[in-house]
Image (cartoon, rainbow, N blue to C red; front, side, top):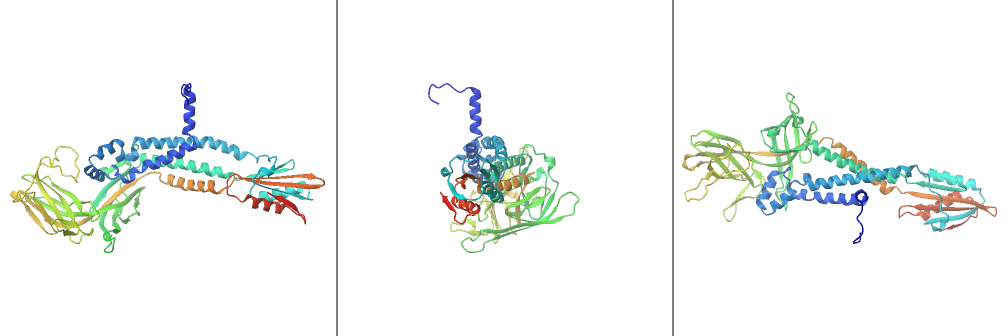
Length: 515
């Protein structure tokens, strides 16, 4: 709009904006924008999927974290800007589909268009002279073209035929199914849920909110809809590459045990492998991680057992160097806390610092730093089991005043200075990290996706074509003209015309011209 030009009235501006939004060009642009907007969610940790990874990212990138948080990059798929693109795409597609459907229905019911006056201007045409009557020629052309599934009309010595009506139907089917996919995914996210839980060998899980380590659900989710199943993890198998350039790479993971779909049911054995989830009442249980849980016992200064059990240590690298925390709030005379690392295959480096050389537990070592004081568990504020709050804790030190570091192998125990107690490394178990999710109606996007592919194939392979045959009598003979028009490029129309002409000629000495 040039400077000084009058502004559009509000109604005309809204009509113009609506036409721009509902154009196919805008829909394709929004679809591309949605794909680009989803990219950050694939390499930036998401708080609803893995909050521990978000916490690790926060520690490693304190400068970037506030920026990412303001932009919603830790929750991409629920951010306002992603939702806005999502909604605009649905509106654009619906606005494209409805008017195009009305246009297509009118075109589908329409008869083949009239023949052009000059066939020579079409991409492929031919003419010949024959002694056969006009009605005979047009009757033969009708039979040939109807056998090729053309819609045929004959009037005033002219035959007009057309086929390929389903090409636009395939196009509309593709875009309609795309809308169904978007709506199905949106509805599934509103009424579905996703959670994560760590289960150690020999322990179990019941599908209640209090037992999840992390849990996220849609706005229409009702916690009473959780299926009342429970499972018991008996064993976890983890195989790694033993040699070669990919030594230590994971090769096979499997979790096995028993589950009951409802209280009182008989246990049913299960085995979960990567990409092969366990499905119970519409809920899918995926095996998404594995690690080690050292079994420790903590006794306080009075000799009382104040903690005993397996403690999951979360892997931090490909060699399964793992970090974890042990808390003993019932210890006397002071609460005890331990923070440290676990090495599945411990090797001492040249600098004297141990590290893990292989992810399998061939030479396990547990390294801990010990603290005493107030763990902060009595304040009523939630606290992660994987974080040790040190605000009111004092670290144990050794003889030289340096922080006390305990290195324990299975069967070892160590005493804390000042008679505050002991800790022992009793054994080792593995744990499985399960992702538990339910998305009601997820078959709808799947079926719609398959139909969308079918519609796309239709729109790419069906070729709309038109054929005209004109016959008239001149000097006692019938002059026949044939023309074809393909609304898509790449067709061998000249050969198609020659084939049709050949099927109409019966003269012994035909005279024809093909252009």
